[in-house]
Length: 120
Image (cartoon, rainbow, N blue to C red; front, side, top):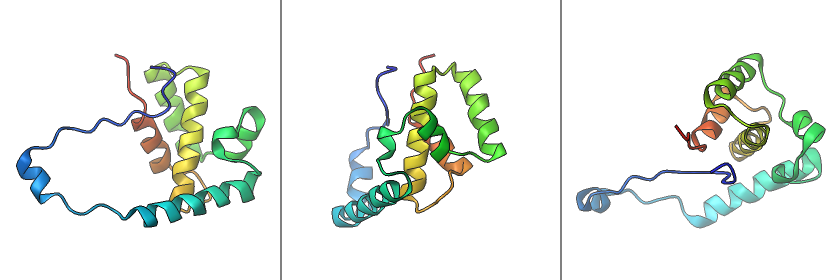
């Protein structure tokens, strides 16, 4: 499991839920948001978030004290490896970019943590 970057669990819907499901976001709208986020990444750091390593990753994923405390707590409770820690930072940076935020907020970090399956 440590090699999977994102895990999203989707519960099975009943036939009644499926018939009432609202329309999703159009693909063109999502695609445009992704393209804008990718351009934001390239303008800020010259590469995509997935390519950030070491010092560059730390430079572009500065956290507020509250976000840092959240990540430290998660690191201890989930026994995160260094690789997992870095992946969470990259995913949080990407979530912030998709939201149009220059800074990684606690909500971005918390969302990134939800995409990691606990192995307990």
